[in-house]
Length: 79
Image: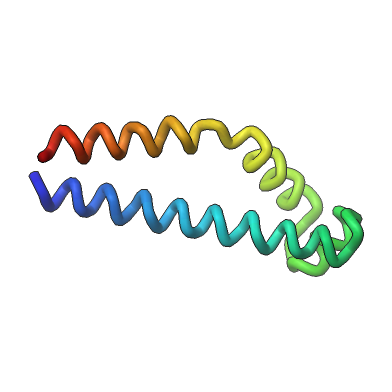
């Protein structure tokens, strides 16, 4: 139904915006600390482990493109 489609698009957009924001904040912290990950984690108020986890997640984040395609195909099928 169209309500499910809207809900799915909303979830996708929120997830995408959150990821993009996190990437930007992490990149700024790394820039300010001259890529010192320990200092960047301190600046962000997270553990080094969490920062490394996020960096790994975003570095290998190729699933995002597939996810976008799935949402678009789903949307097109609803039309």
